[in-house]
Length: 199
Length: 351
Image (cartoon, rainbow over all chains, first blue to last red; front, side, top):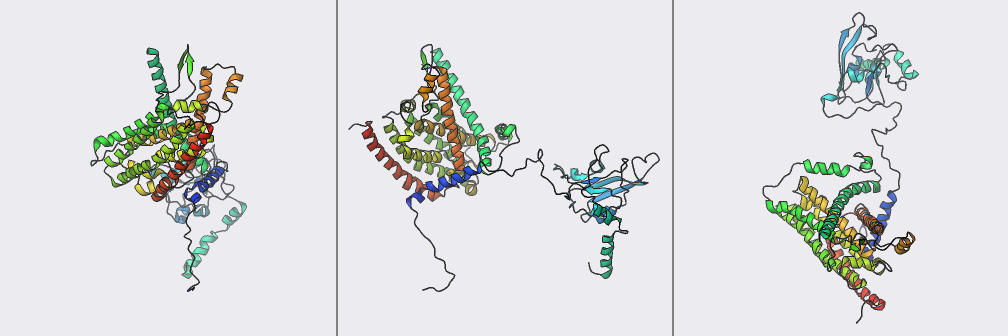
């Protein structure tokens, strides 16, 4: 008599001799592993071989120079304000006479530090930057031994004059057009929302 | 006499070095092969294809901190890995690596010692090997170590029996000789023993795997249940010796299987090839080719050991005992009975 339709028939089949000595099962298992000897391996041998990144991949930051080799950053602090992880700190300095080739405008960043352990690579700093100075690139932040070494200073962030870093993938015409909107529209919208009391 | 001593010491040192080298590179090949079977590449950083990996591992083992537990029996604790590796190497004494070389009319067999009760010696030495595990596990004064040691010894007892009976059948097939070199030499003419002893070979293979404590029979050190089994408390080079001895055991039992069942240094059409090359009996080139053939067979067996390890999960303890006592023992008795009948008609046994 069936009491419920949820009952299951349990199989308590006694193993046959060939099952008890395991050999047929073992041989078929070995055939499976052997076939894997010749399969394609998905391994990417990292330092020699690098995985292809998406064109908009957000990796390690770069501080750009302009076409004359002067640093674009004016230490306005927009990026630090925009940063949700509070990873960016900087101190400003005033450009002296004769340093025009080094810094694009009168004010420049004396120090500029990004804590790569705090950074969440959201790209808001890049979006906030009015001087097209900071960009995220497709480079991966290297592993390191000390936590202190993850605070990247200007020595690691500013691009070298003779070794420019290509950011055209992130600096598309659409992005440039968006940045031309006066007063940065996304900030505006955000403040509007704040004023309305819902965010 | 002086010549004899020089010849014996050279062959001892060479075989010792080769055993250790093979054991070291077995660890590399184990990891590489496991990687290849699992769609990975395995070790690839230390040297080309990771070939310096054994050196790196050995160096690591040497420089790690050596810990001897306070509650252990210190003398036996230190003795155990030594005992284990000594017995592992000792079993390699019997293996005839190639046809004898004759220099100035004297014949020099490529074997350390041709004991006329070689098969029994082999069984004896391999069962002493378990003392290393037992002493190591017991003297650690740790319940996991002790459990591992108990399992190892129980496993040894269960599988030695089937192995011994399979070997009796083999001895009957090879005409009643107990000497390793004669068993190999008998396979020179005609077929390798595996043709007459297919079942015996499978039984011996399974038992050899159990005796060397290889997966799927590695219950003695099974990490998931017993931390590390009998070597839980061992560290640094003593642990290294245990692991090393396991690979030497595997090498020796592979060589034994290749010799007992697959003709050792003999291979099909060997004499035709030697005649075609114009080689005389006793030439060192023949010995070299024979050694190469034996070595390749051994390496294939080592790879099969690893292949099985990376295919099959570990047996449960009751499965292990059932397989040993209820399957392999009856099978080996059946094999013995069949062998007696077959050999009677082949004329190897007279009543």
